[in-house]
Length: 256
Image (cartoon, rainbow, N blue to C red; front, side, top):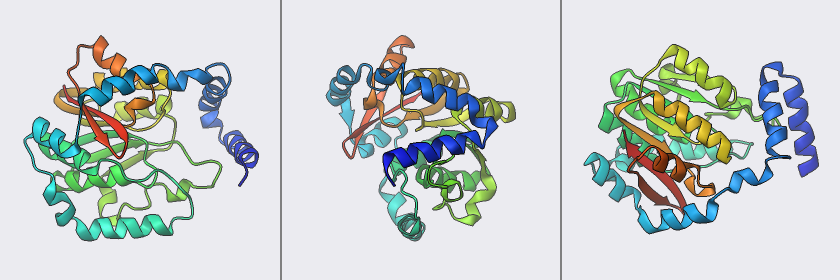
């Protein structure tokens, strides 16, 4: 599919969904007036992150006092099936991130309520739900529809049916999804951000999510090297953060 065709199909997809018009307006502004916003402070933050980054294994041990080795062996069959489901999916989406970091954040907090932004195949959702199912917990996910590829039906496709009873998926942009989620549950044990990558989008969402994180809860943000939003947020709020280097990208994580 050419880029022009993709943009056109995405636009038509928006027009068919009046509930997504607010996000359409924001995207038009983001891709015209605020084009540079996505990379604001990128160089500064990549230097800052590189200086302090540790491995996922080191971060989990330092923050949670836990070893990560058991995750891959305990869930070998589930992960193998998830990989197969991803291969069979006709729509290309984001792959797995630091699954152990997410899983052990939930284990450390004995999480009952978790919110994540960004789902795609559902790798982070899977890691979260594998922990939550032990305590009958609930995962609240915010995810925009894949409008260009008719990919809605494949979102979360790697999550097995037996885990879906503890999962609530809100199919809007964060600015519409998060108020709906917070109306259902106001305090969370773990927050995982992996959606709007723009500087302004992150700054808005970080502030909203942080207000709803309990003391002792864990905040995780993927791809913090895209711009300086995460660094600026932590410095503004005097937050001591750990930076994880994972497959050439940086993840921010801290305990409130």
